Length: 325
Image (cartoon, rainbow, N blue to C red):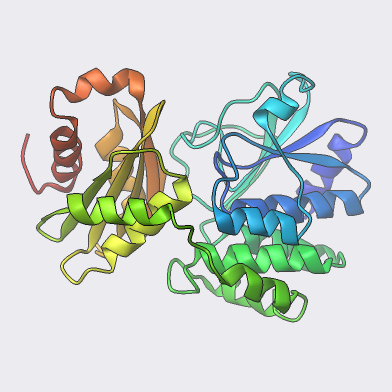
């Protein structure tokens, strides 16, 4: 905690930004909101920022119910200066899922594996179930009172990122859940759990069902239209629930990129390493053992050839050793 308090001292009097990964999910939003509250306790105001959209019903409800104010890149880029401190939360600079803003990424608090090493003034990168777990631990260890909205946001982020404590859970996650449980607003949490799908989301599920192909326990499905990151991840979880599938790869075509979500229930296959290997040289990928993501920019599309869906399939199957080449 001394190094974290040193970071707070360094940030005093500066214009501080807390940046999440692109298209932030509940864990990223809850963690950033919690860190913002922690800094405010020590007299350091901070602006939450992100690239993309708050594009899922659950995340929009979360920001409204918990009174969380996040600013898009367009809202902060005019005022952000190169010397302004940025604390990366639930993401790491160069990780492929965070836009490079004008400020100085001097700190990082994240729970994902590192694929592009970066030197920070302060770094806390530990592989636990959620980034919210780390922020909750800061409150506990520093003995800072936790506001109800913060506890609710951290609780929701922890639950969603661990798929209700079924994925990537560590003893620290359980420990922090016990801390958050009596402090959270359960009416708000129950509201967040209800009606998390929108009618238009069904198109993505329908398209994945139509297009899924299974190769030796590997389910691969392409969605031929733009989808939010969170929806692609939900479809990947859905594909993984099939009895015949132990590794799921789902991707969606966007205006600027092809976005991937990867899931693994196979103990010998690390989803993050699979995404990193498969997309190397074309894009970026990485993440946890059970869940990962990645992207290929549209300007690399010609490298996939005349049949890009087949090429994407082969990228992952070769990375898995299912096919040679």
